[in-house]
Length: 408
Ligand code: GTR
Image 1 (cartoon, rainbow, N blue to C red):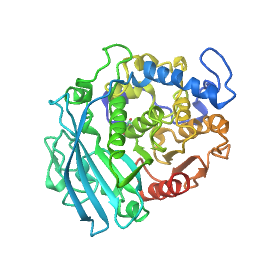
Image 2: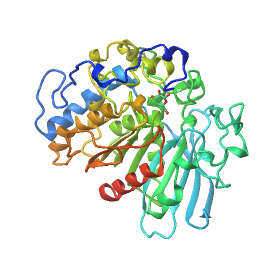
Image 3: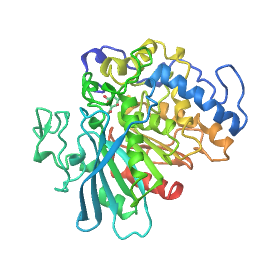
């Protein structure tokens, strides 16, 4: 089942292409007041308007005040993973808010490279210790989802939880290709449940409660920029060559972070679906109503007013993707992940092309959705892998190739 939430299960889902009602996406090169955008300068002055609209109607307003941080390197292993990597763990303390636990960064850097390594930046769902069986990784001490058949007990990790997601994180392959990997457990920024904000960053950095107050997706996006702040201080990586990658709900957050923070060199949204790369106006798979029913803490309150009326949204998700331009953007889907609407994600990516064209950057270069396992495009890229909602080695192979061509 696409959702195991009782309320969300009662909301109709459409999986029939012939039942998708006609819709019109807001034109990506037209401002709110109807002005036509014909050059980069006009596009760049339009960006703040789009960010404001996504803040007011979708993700909520981001805090703008700088926060004071202290970086504490808690461990360094110069010979991790059989001598292939340097592993560092860094705790980011938010010093003005001593009640907040730190955000813990796990960083693997390939050994034997003379230059600063380009770096994949990504949050994980189940704790840094879930990314690899490497015994040197500190077990997460924060609230964790009770997944993995007894490996997490009462929302706390056990030793058995090590590497429980390592299938999704081919660390040796990433290192062998010359990339570093920086990851953080997303629950360090905000545990993913409706009460999670109480122990997360939103408990201290809140916009005034209102229709546009930020949600958990905004909080995770904020955390991604704080990861980048740290990486800018670490001489072993090249913080100008960061590839921000997110899967699913973290894919939604990665797109929002990449839209807001131009320091990210490229963005990859793996199966980000509704509220991510999929256009909301297309009634197929998950809808805004499903999202708000199951995850009331993810978006801003105003987003709920579009539950039954995505056409009233002043923006659609292709405009979020366009905020990544002219930086490389990869949107990926999976055949058996119809909940996330592969075609809707393809159309979202496709609709950004006019913006990339303003910069002379090639887009997807096809007009029709490609067959399974046929990546298409250059600066904007897309694939639909066979299989289910997941991150696989196939996906990583495409992302490494994309990073080699577009970022490295
Ligand atoms: C689903 C949700 C999706 C996606 C996914 C995930 O339950 O409906 O929007 O975020 O979770 O994060 O794996």
